[in-house]
Length: 56
Image 1 (cartoon, one colour):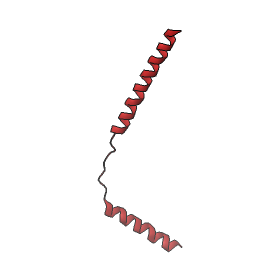
Image 2: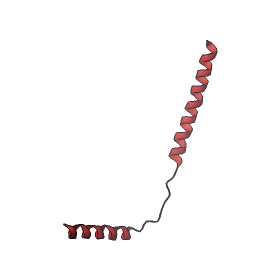
Image 3: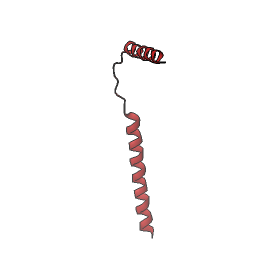
Image 4: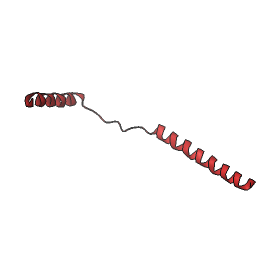
């Protein structure tokens, strides 16, 4: 009986270690930084709001 407990404990330790590694990997991932043109986005919103006001 003692052997199965040790095996289970070993599997549990391995799974805990894997989980910790995965968490660290997820935290260290950095999103891709894109150059965003804020002025162009503002113009798009203005165009959309003008279209909505015309259609109403």
